[in-house]
Amino acid sequence: MVSEMIVGRDVAPVVIDGVVARTVVLASADAGLRQRLRASLTGLRWQVREAGGGAEAMAQLDASQPEALLVDSWLPDLEVGEFAGQIRMLYPGMELLRVDGGVDGAARSPRRNELLHALREAQDGAGNDTAAWAAAPVAVPRSVGRGYGGAQEAPRQVLSVLMGREELVWQESPARVQPVVTLPEMVGASEAMQELARLIRLVAPRSTTVLIEGETGTGKEVVAKAIHRLSERAGKPFVVLNCAAIPEALLEAELFGHTRGAFTGAVQSRTGRIEAAHGGTLFLDEIGEMPLALQAKMLRFLECGELQRVGDNETMRVDVRVIAATHQPLEQRAGERTFRLDLYHRLAVFPVEVPALRMRMEDLRLLAEHFLDLMGQEMPRKRLTIEAEARLYEHSWPGNVRELMHVLERGAILAGDRMEIGAEEIRFRRATRG
Image 1 (spheres, rainbow, N blue to C red):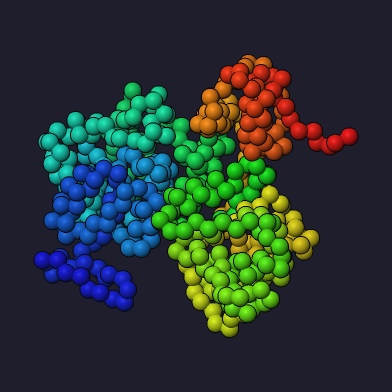
Image 2: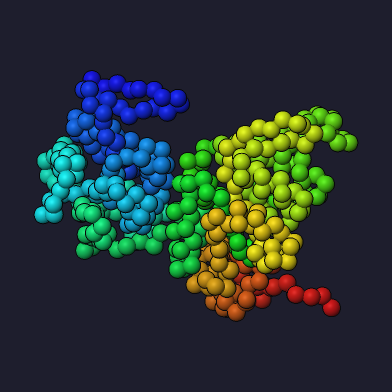
């Protein structure tokens, strides 16, 4: 018999047959595996919290503080070895097991023995052939499948159990090639882009404030959208405000909203961008352009989660994750007293640097092909000649990825009806005019 005790808004520990159940989080994209494990673990008086990916599992860990985590060999949003290593650091006292077909000789606690028993039952339930089950294919998204030479399936890894603080080592199938995985939004396989994707995957599941730094045209908004997509807030609003695009006199009302008659022209009340992002993410682009007077109000919101509309005496609480972006050296500006140092530190809880294109020129061809593919959706798809490609590699790209996109669009227009873009069509803007 299963019962639940309700305390406040949260569900208290589940009681099964008069015994308080321990909690385990099960992270797997395989619904069938989750169903089998849930049946086995519930019979052993475990409360199972399921997660279809790493970001969801991280949220479940934060919410339930479980005794154990079972993680599958592949997750759709996070690299499994990286994810497990992070979990070991954050929750050192928690049992961390991986789906396993064998048993090692290390000493086990009763709790671990129960989990291993449930794993064996789940494997037997798949057909009483552990080896065949462990080698069964796992469907992966197309963006990941490309890393396996275009295959749409990757063999399931044969896994082992993590004991204590044992080093995380995967037993790989010899035929498997480790894919280069970034994120669907991001084009490029360079080390810089892989590191950027790693940071995004790690911070996305949390509500931590993120400061995205990088030169103009590097794709900072793309990074912000990727963080939002991988978070639990993905189904809620993603609201963008460019602090440089709105006049200073209107920026406060745009952010915080205003009441009717708060200022000349305020004929009706209006919801601000912060309030509109409730439950989701607010992306503040070019945060360095925010006026000093407004920075103090923004700092207060970040610290207490409360906002006050312009012209209103009442405050309201909102649940919003803030991601800010800038191309300016905010720490240097804080030293010059043109940006609040306390606001900088509050924004830069988790700083992310987006690499300039000149720092990842090995991605240039992939990016060029990507933009030519996009343009091919509206006009016949054109290709670059060898000479045109060489011209691209000779350029320093001060405008970064955005400049590359514009150069290719300009080249496609200049090529006219020809299907090739030649070197003569690759034209860069002059830095100064004569």
